[in-house]
Length: 215
Image: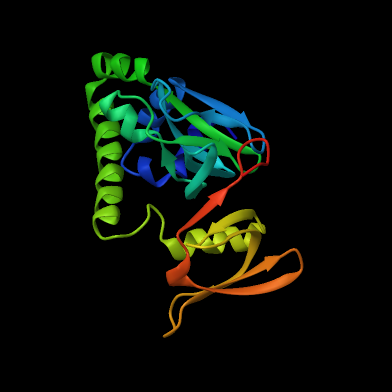
């Protein structure tokens, strides 16, 4: 399947005609990443925005040498649009969790499309602004880019090793179950075969390992 057809499934391009998608696809590069491969690092220069065609992406920030988990993005999500819009350095890092394919749109091509076909350029800009607005409203409402519930479900499903930090203890574990709906919300973890229940209010952070598998 060509890139043009794959872009048709991306919700951000629902307002684009087939001819407009072809123009856009011709300016994009399809890139594949292996699990744990870094796509860009925090504070690196901005060069492109990415649309996920398949696989999953971990967005994280480095704190004290370890990656502090922000969110997991998946097929049809986009990332890198904040720095793409203001052309400042990246505010977070991104790496592939699985074998992942993305459509990469370089900033230099935005200048080209604005000159050659300003209508397509405006549609692309509107799509990016809609996503920025959605994320801004989510953060303003005290939510993650994706809901914290969905993020935890992602970690449970993949059995991803994480570091859960409380005020007194740090656990290197996998999350088995989480319940935030009851009167006493808790997270159940597997700590090397030992089951531990942690009240949600005690959880200060959930951290993913760095690219070397270390916390």
